[in-house]
Image 1 (spheres, rainbow, N blue to C red):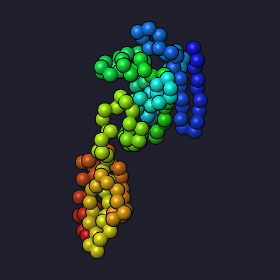
Image 2: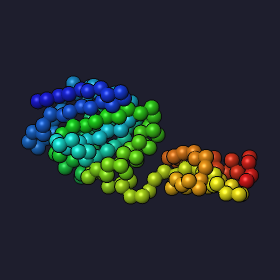
Image 3: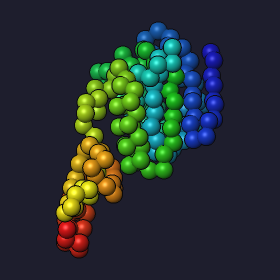
Image 4: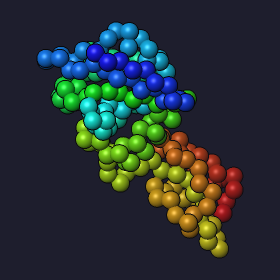
Length: 171
């Protein structure tokens, strides 16, 4: 069994042992090395290709659900049979992990991620570059727009902020 713990800035790469029989086994000491902080995890196949990306408020607890089999989603068993390693990216908050997960899924389009592969993304607030500027919410960034703020993971928060800005600074 080969185990690796490589630290690259805020990245931790943990290799798991080979899949043996019907159960996916990982050393308990390896799981203990995972931080209990927010972040993004990427399961990779034995060739190193990313096959699933997820986010977690507590990386140790979330990854251990996959390893122990307590995550009962149908795709998890198949995922764990193909997984050879898991890469961890630490974030400062759960919201940051959510945004990073979204970007990574769109960029890498892993086999087991069925959500967020489409053109949907989190919205931004922007001011148009027109003679009479308007404050708008948009999911597409353009050169015709200025002063972006976002992305917003909670639409109601973005709409409240937009209403407040429009009330304070009518354009």
